[in-house]
Length: 249
Image (cartoon, rainbow, N blue to C red):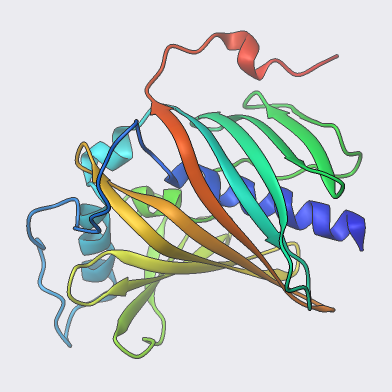
């Protein structure tokens, strides 16, 4: 169970990490990155219309052009049937496919993973994961790129839904606010488990919509496990040395 809980945390951080894009900023607004929706969300909006609107609300080309980020923050972990959180901290450095991640939540986990774009190192044997650009919000930046398809899924109450899939069959389901066009949640499957992400607090930072607080959920045989993330300090488009992502021999 401990290893499964650890793997859950690793996957959930990995799959959500690329989307807390921010520099130090103030304000608690949740306004869309764009001043208005390019495509009104009507009853007849196609899945491609919805994806384009969500992409523009997220920041459009500014969102797509981000090169790297450094994140420092805190996380509260809840195991299945648990009501008391296990507090932890995380540090993430990501540049496209390359990743350096450290997570510490004693006594549950002390973990480091590196991915240099080709090779992976994990301080926990057997916790080897796919590249960090296959699931989640980063997929939204590829909605109109070759090899990706956008299809319909059922709406959820006032939230409109669509799915983005790549050529390998990896897919993410998105739900957006029908008024603002903002993504409010997304879901995907990995390793036979169902994952969900919900944005609880967002800010408009330099034209990019940033989730500052977000919750994660995974369905386990023992019940659902949760994680609540909070970004405390972050920088983007930094000068990074190649040794940041060096995988040990």
